Length: 412
Ligand code: RNT
Ligand code: ZN
Image (cartoon, rainbow, N blue to C red; front, side, top):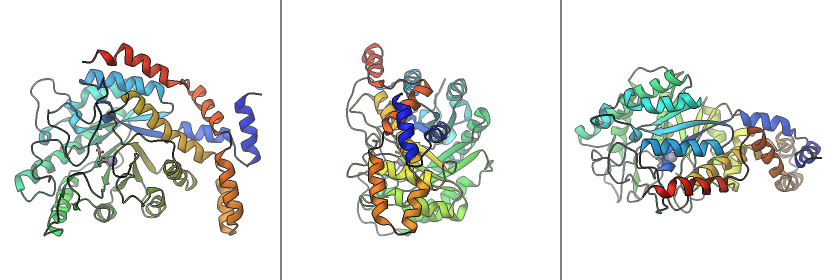
């Protein structure tokens, strides 16, 4: 008997059908962030990363051109099983001739990405880039009191809606367009309302662009603080949740964007009760929003459980968002995305109905014992079966090292 067949029997004894789990996982799409490949630099200007986010490390081989980034994404995609989407930032515009400002970007500046996505049969998600740009003034964009600055970024947001619609039309797959602004203050502000009122007005203006809501899902990502912006964040959780609810857009939670003892896994159920769709940035915050590579850790598993056992796989847009420049970037991509998928499989392999019944019967003793026993069930054998069925190598490290020797080390 194969290891998988044995695992299948063991799970069946707990009331879990591994075949059902494998089939369900195959259909889950994870939106893979392009920015792990080049440390969030992009192609549209030479500005240093800003906005309170940071990549640290200097591992050789980061992608410097669209061709290099595309090749690296291909390598990563070949090692990641299942359905994928490509998640782009506006800063990854590709200019043939003279670059245009972010307020003037157009679909044509993303044509190469559309060709790339179409050839690989994947959809594209999109993000306006409100950071690392000379028009960010005093750490403010959409909430700036300077009308020229605010208008510039509103124009950028509108341009991005048009580009998102173009992605959806071209690929035939809806585009999730996520708005996140870094705006905030390092020290205690005198006016907390003003910037939020301006942000609200800016969002209203951006969303006044007519767009097809079945093709473009606009999401809004909140945050608690950024580096250098410790005292006040315009786009706080309360602001973003309220704005999303009132304006019929989708809230996005990044699990690095809360106080360290708060967990996104506990927030998902509440948002599911009040939203048709919700969106996630899966990351790993180490003491702060450090954006380490996602691991197969407790909180990632708990997030996945909340999606699976609430029957919400079709209602949650799952995207990765991390950037580690201290290790091989292809490996970072593959490890992190695979861990999201592993967590989903782990959740799909829980006897969720039975566990819920134990809770409702208040048999917390049995609930604890069963949940603990399941942690050491032969999960790895089911995961390896999934990789084999997907035709993806279980040992990706040797492939990554090989690519590093053949391709990455030559980028000096
Ligand atoms: C920043 C947000 C945001 C960015 C990306 C690059 O704290 O998480 O999502 O990481 O847009
Ligand atoms: Zn994020």
